[in-house]
Amino acid sequence: QEIRNSFEQLIYQFFDHLGSYRNDLPEEEVNSIEQLLEKEKEWILYSEESSSCSFGNLKEHYDNFINSLKEASPKLDSILIQKKEEREKAEKEAAEAEANRKDVFRDKVKNPKTPKEKVEAAQVRKDQGNTFFKDNNYEHAVTRYLQAINLLSEIPGDKFTEDINTTKLSCHLNLGMCYINLKKYKLCIENCNMA
Image: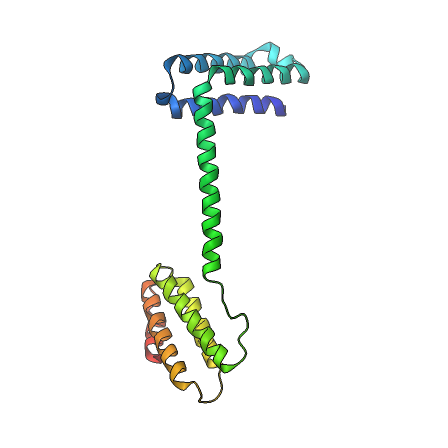
């Protein structure tokens, strides 16, 4: 049954390909492919021979059909190979772009321990939030700004007060802008009041 399903799928798949690329093919190739597909569709779906033949005979008929298709459709075959290569290239480029995008926003300070490291890590997260904001990626920007504020809240003493206050002010105002764009007005007001 599996070979029969594959046979039918191949026939309908080639009918689709023919519909998509008909204008790019020579007329004699289109006619040749259509005749072959119609003949095999009639055989696999309606003939007594196909419904009663053994697996081996069906497999042999299927293999012969594939070879006949290759002979009848050299131009279509080259178009399909080209489209497949283009699709694979686009998928590879998209995967590489995604991998590179993730690397851009990876934190440089893994686990800040000292107050100075925490201030620096908070400023890095704020800058990452700004980059997300410029890309209209408000949810990720919010995450980075909140991370920065949380890091700054962990710093004891008065040593970095000016840097802490400047970065917190910037983060709260930027959060306000993010929340306006996300239509979360109550959170926008809260962050503007905290600034």
